[in-house]
Image (cartoon, rainbow, N blue to C red; front, side, top):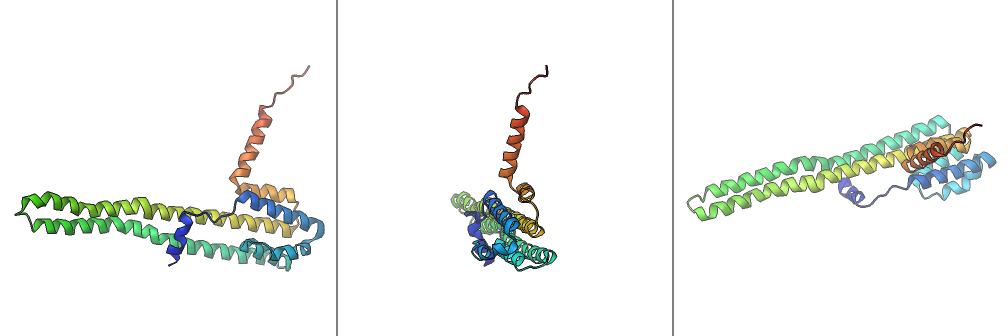
Length: 212
């Protein structure tokens, strides 16, 4: 049942865009550095993202950083385990489907062998028998296995997002400079890394004035 429910994530991306999440964490870090962690108490309850809300609430409540890390890392691991188990349903089904198709073809051929006396029906019967194989292989390679891989990719992205949030909240608890927190979090975002790469390329491509 969990696998069927997760099937919708093959077509819908539930993950929040990382760049926007980074900006939100940095906003919290800047406010906490200026006014202290307690100043985030009211905002923490209104955060729509449940994982960020939980992490920030624990931080505001004064929970030890090591305890925060242990609790949230355990939650991340359990969520990842459940998601991979649900994706495994479709991965296993993709392995079984061709075998079921071959069984269908063999059963069809057995029925054809019973009617060898009617040679006109043999060719038609063989063609129909092999349709089962086509269905099995097609179902596995066009739906089941791609769905399993897409679910795993979604799970990996969600795990990465939560790890980024955990690093950000840990930096807030430690009182790190928001610029340093941003540098750490941008390692998780391809978009942020691409922007930084372009910036460096523009800097290296800038003309250097010749010394007189």
